[in-house]
Length: 260
Image (cartoon, rainbow, N blue to C red; front, side, top):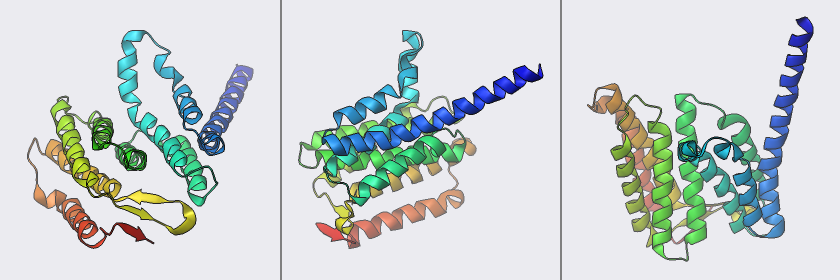
């Protein structure tokens, strides 16, 4: 019996080590191959292959698994697309992307607490809208609107599915529509904050939608906690913070080019 326990523990340790190594390879490799080849195709294929377990069940469960993994897919694909948009030369942003994707896979993604779930959804909104803005800035505005709608849908569902409210479909759709509307409004005057020669570029719309998602989640959870009633005293801090932050961004940081 003691030998069996020892063997079992050894296998668990080996499995854990392999899991860490594979995640590091995925995090670094997907970004590196995108920079080296100058194409997003292989990087996204690697991200898609890492989600093989979605289809390792009966077909009737595929849709459920896809919905459950949307946030992770958005984050992974976004890292690849942002790396693609940065060009084929290694810049500071590329190292940041590789490190952050690895940390996502090892530290944040496996967690399932309420705080971790909210953080995962906000990361998906931040990275997803950044990638879609950089990718579709010169394209038809409908592409950005649709992508922001989809990102908001996945991120909102990711949080609300953990709540006690089983009828979150309408709320999810409302949040997605509002995000799409914000994307449509911001598309007419896209602002991107750049940071010198680092290659780091953060669109204004990314900050606005991330703040909106944060405040929306707080308000909704407060309503669930209080049987559908919103207590302003409990959500005043995030609501006021969101309003002030977005106002400052729109009024004082809306030059066509803003270099830090």
